[in-house]
Amino acid sequence: MSFIRVRPAIMDDIDMVIAINIECLPEHYPLSFWVEHLKKWSDIFYVAEVDNEIVGYALSRIEEGQSYFKSSYIKMGHIVSVAVREKFRRKGIATYMILTLLNSLKSIYGAEEAFLEVRISNEPAIKLYEKLSFKVVKKLTQYYLDGEDALLMAKAL
Ligand SMILES: CC(C)(COP(=O)(O)OP(=O)(O)OC[C@H]1O[C@@H](n2cnc3c(N)ncnc32)[C@H](O)[C@@H]1OP(=O)(O)O)[C@@H](O)C(=O)NCCC(=O)NCCS
Image 1 (cartoon, rainbow, N blue to C red):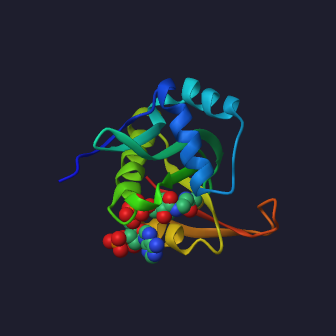
Image 2: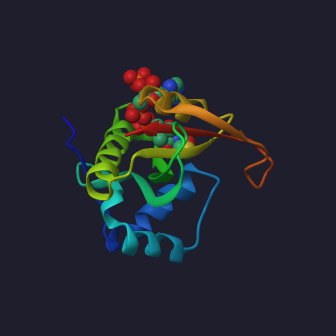
Image 3: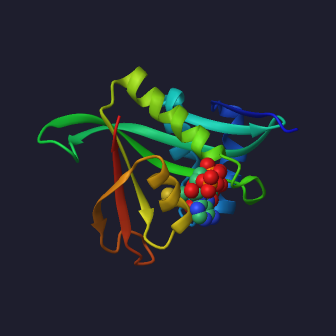
């Protein structure tokens, strides 16, 4: 039986996180993006390990803005990127990482909501977020560089 662990990312994990990002998603970022995120928000940047091998990551940042559910200005967690290597999917790993992330967004930063953007064609991810009670709050037309629309999904914490 495999041992699955979710833990905060550290600098030594960055190469593997970048490799997983390139393998799993069309949105890539420079090394400085990952390093800055880790320096600033190390407690809301998680990796998942299976038998001590990193197989996925989930990172977020804190932003302030208009609530998606009420008429006030609030602190929100922006889930920026999530990926799990193909061989390790449908085992609950993304769910485990995101639930851990949501808990930290609320307990460490006092975030009142979490939100994210997802490609309108990305059915697995949309299903995952719906299962975690995220709601579609907006469509972002031509959000991605290739012209695809995004759904903005949000959840009260
Ligand atoms: C989306 C992604 C992160 C899901 O990771 P995962 O570890 O497989 O997700 P989980 O096992 O936690 O899935 C939880 C639920 O999400 C839904 N789901 C996940 N993958 C799905 C798929 N391929 N088809 C339909 N529903 C899916 C299901 O409801 C699933 O629950 P179930 O397995 O009990 O039916 C993974 O497919 C991935 O890395 N995709 C490529 C990168 C990506 O699209 N990232 C998100 C960008 S916004």
